[in-house]
Image (cartoon, rainbow, N blue to C red):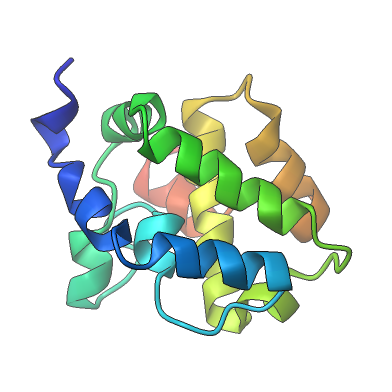
Length: 143
């Protein structure tokens, strides 16, 4: 599979100037700027904004490509680990109410694509009592 089949460069381009900021904010335990869509991508169709469409992942196949990407997959795992490292077990406190929902959607999507990778299910368990995002499951026709 070609890594550019899904235009994954759109994520790299978006992260170029904000990935460091995202990590700094996650380490500090408080998201303050706008980077959620391309750091913690969710399934396309969950949001209605042009930004959510641009950075929405279209399928489980694209999700696998994202995870396998030598930069994006590592960055996603690194960012999730920073959230998991927070002493605060409330994702809303770290990310804000709306972005906590996006985080849950992201974790749901990637947990389905890589069920053997504990980081996704561990984060779902820690922050959302193990509950997956219902809308993500519906869009993927998994209910």
